[in-house]
Length: 145
Image: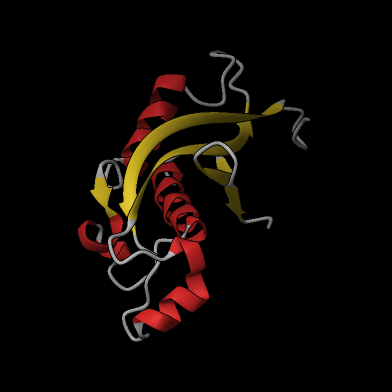
């Protein structure tokens, strides 16, 4: 794909990993209602998972470097995005989740917001993030969804 000024554009994605514990729990609800709404996802003790975060960006290919972003820089942005989550109990250790249930969907929103903020000084557009909980369930979140 090329931009109107004929500069080639590309899309890039990268994956990083983190591990967290979280609890699907609404404090204003009874234990029974939490169990009813969240089912097997509710536990008074929370649960831990291995997560993967993929970020998808788009930008113009620099004619000198041949890249839209240096991979080491992109890695650092992604690692910084998940650093507050890694080996933490999200409900108790991450202020964002003090009043927000740390569902997979909300974890994706959190990551998207952090990465978007880090990309502001660049010309890259964050298209979406994909957050995996284990290998068989994931959520996509982005501006075009």
